[in-house]
Image (cartoon, rainbow, N blue to C red; front, top):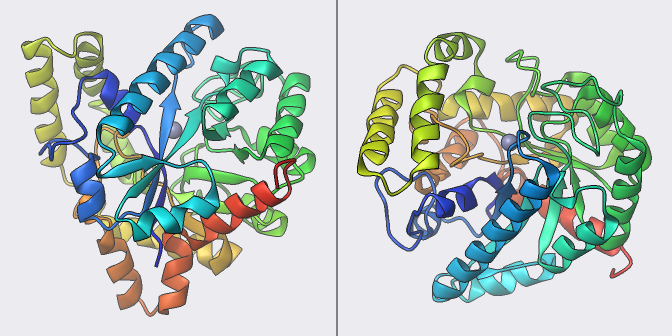
Length: 360
Ligand SMILES: [Zn+2]
């Protein structure tokens, strides 16, 4: 079985001075935890907030990319940068976890196809078109008012991504953007970290109709672990403390070496982990639902670790990811079905996107 997590925000933690080589008790992802969890490949997202200007977003993403590349080189005994689906099994045989690069929010490419090509050459293998704000490419699930879906430039970007062999990621996209991309993209599309709207009503989650459309196009939904997306009742509880959580996190982001800001964030994390919240079983409920609607060939996992302020019970960090597969076994899934969800389905799409590209 090959285990692939299609989304985490760990590069943002590098910016917050986390040493990924150490097993940090408060980290959701670090290199020792990836090995302990039996993860074979993980997509690290270059995330830029929608609040940044396009120019600032390019600088932020480039800075993050440089620091990530440096970090991977410094830990070459444990991890390796991967850019091609065919490298992944080889890396696994050598005992190395493959780190792949995604980009979350298209702002860093501004309105420039050459910038998209630049980031592809630097190893970026998927682009999440938007984050929580409409941008030059497309409308997001959080707003959805600027273009009525994919912009004319966004169409050009999707076609160029097809040509390059970059996966189109529709997590965070508005429903209209999602359907526009299904029409424009000649390769299967994915959502690297979303849940099912039938089980939890968050607008970031995918409806059954979207799941069926994704299946028909050959794509895959990678189920997110975020308790707010897993459960409406938890989302309601969380909304009462959200401002307090964001304030503590933003203080830490602004001053990652300020001990008071760091300790304030640690105290907040302990408080969040003490909350009654959904467990890994709820993650498997969303897997079950997606499988029942889209089929076993169109579902995977995208933890969103290090981008989520709180994790499910029993699945507090990536070292525990195996509980999902154990729970699937308990629910009667066959080993080959578990392997598809663990990474096989996403790898199929990744290989297909490469095969249909200019390079393939
Ligand atoms: Zn996200």
